[in-house]
Image (cartoon, rainbow over all chains, first blue to last red):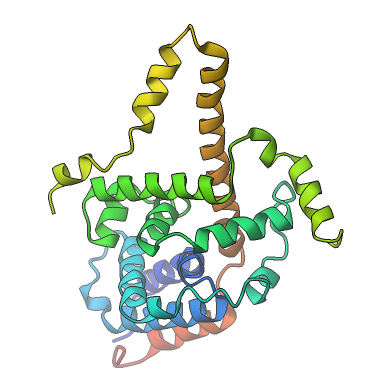
Length: 183
Length: 79
């Protein structure tokens, strides 16, 4: 039996954000793409357990997240990719976010405990409701809210954002100068 | 898991923020702390989405699109 093209298109339509979530979790683009591929293999092998009309992104994110926690998490926090391919693939991040600031942010994100990181990404970037995020992570809504709060507080600490000037162009300029003026 | 158990884990920041908002006497310093807190949060959200959306905007990599098409065209379902 061939897969319903409508279902297939829903799967394909979720792939971009699924990748973004995977990269946030893995901190490494190659591993993230492996994770996405394995997620899709599993999802399509068990497509019968997906109920048409329900939330396809939430279903795929749940599979990916479980796979990550069972098999990928151990390998996660090696930040060997600090200036590597991940950064290279992100060629055109917005101008207002300077490269140095961007890398600092990514490094800070990688230091968060993975349960806080995933909660923050799901709610703050993927756009899931607290309820969907809780379902994806298999925990209570209050737990998600608490993790998101702690993640934001920790990020602000790590980035030492205690003054609004830290975010202005001056900081980006200073950072570039400090790094030897290269772009 | 009970939700009630997690309530105490909430940091008290939001309550403090409200108290500071109402504190007209200590206004200059405290008001600005509250405002900065919000700007910091907004800025973190903005960076987070910039990072995420950059990957989203790359779309579906060809090898993944091929994989999905191949799997969904298999006669006998998958695996």
